Image (tube, rainbow, N blue to C red; front, side, top):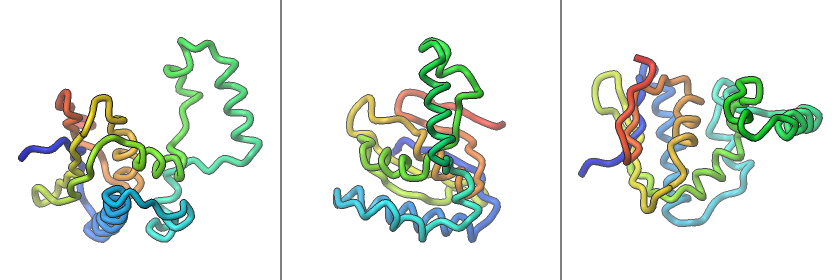
Length: 155
């Protein structure tokens, strides 16, 4: 069976194994619909992986939202100065609420891997959180099949 997927370049087996470890834990929690405390996820990420996420101070967050709401609605999503990386804990919330089943994180060739999933409804939440997880381990997203279309990236 062909599943939807996010495909990425693997150039570090150790980091890939770390990604697989956290993927398997997320999958386990999602399959059981029993999610651990947010802070319990920190042990699966080293400093390098955690640096990919947004950890704003209270003042930074307040300023960001002030600017966000001061920007006209039609411009908010297109203004690069309003973009932030994923918030670490929001990523897990998105995995919890995504309407898809996680299938596998596996190598598909010598230097490419896929994180596979199966949507159970449309819209299901998109691939943003999956991409954030993969990129936090320094992998480059090459392509995705989101169930609607196949898209190549960074090629």
